[in-house]
Each structure stands twice: as C-alpha cells, then as structure tokens.
Image 1 (cartoon, rainbow, N blue to C red):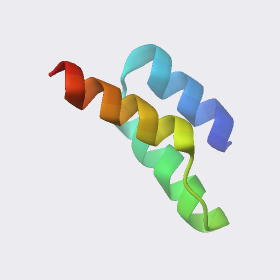
Image 2: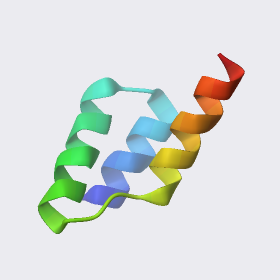
Image 3: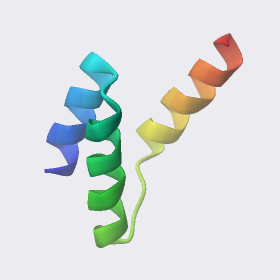
Image 4: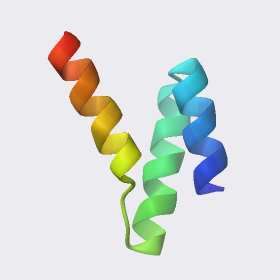
Length: 46
C-alpha cells in the first residue's frame, strides 16, 4: 500500500495520496528517503 500510494502521489501530486503514504509509513514506523528527497528537491526549485 505504501509503494502504491507513493507512486500515485509522484505521478499526480495528489495530496490525499501523500497523506495515505505518510500514514502507511507511520504505521510501519518508517519514512521513505524518496519522499524526503523529492520534497527537498521541490523546495530547492521553488
């Protein structure tokens, strides 16, 4: 579920998909490095 919601978020930018992804990560007690990298890249471009 985590990978699927991340792929949907990465392709569409859908906030609800990202929230689902973070919820899945929190339930597993982990956070993806990919998510951090993408967010940092977007902030640097901003």
